[in-house]
Amino acid sequence: MDTQRFHNKVIIVTGGGSGLGEDYCHGFASEGGIVVCVDIDEAAAIRTATALRETGNRSIAVPCDVTRTHEVEQMVEEALHTYGRIDVLVNNAGVISRRSLVGTTDEDWNREIDTDLKGPFLCARAVVPHMMERGYGKIVNISSVAGIVGCISTAYAASKAGVNGLTRQWALELAPYGIRVNSVAPGYTATPINEKLRLTPAAKRIGETIPLGWGKPADITAAVLFLSANESDYITGQTLAVDGGLTTTVDMGPEYRTFDT
Image (cartoon, rainbow, N blue to C red; front, side):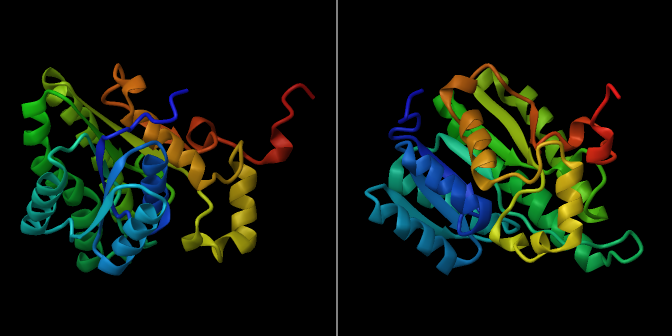
């Protein structure tokens, strides 16, 4: 496999200052990518971009609230001013909260829908005209298994199902311009944000009901990089669930997996 799939390609990663977004940034950089690390937390974005530059890669940090049109447009302008092109957009910035239907407030709903659904829309709308001019581009939207099966909360499920819908619509609209659009739907992945959860009995049960158990950040990053690379040029409009088999089956636990007894 080509170990420099992103040589001189410019990649915007929103929410790149921490968590899976940070892992994506390092993954792109390790294969020659020029990373525009975008995050609402400016200090986090700077940490990621600095770490990439210290390993000999090109990267800038851009603070941006993806729910604000003006900030998104400024972010894209800065990326173009600095590097002259945008090859890949990874819409990763997001928020999540566990709320029941009746427990979801207007504020909860607006916060998640604005960040997780409106954010990708604003970023894509700002980037796509440049990609259309060049006749090439890749957009990878970060969805979730919560957009496929019910497992998190009302607002989060709605936002991620919406992301999957946008992926299909944009793929249809943008194919004539050489722009491919896909989404990655991570399952339960072991990250620092859920470290405490993974020490609980609930986490053990979650792992037992996923055919391949909990995932690793590298599993999700591999899928994001694949859908951003030239080798996936004949794939568009798809949602790739990277979930250890969670959404492929109704699994009642390990004791039910011996099917011939």
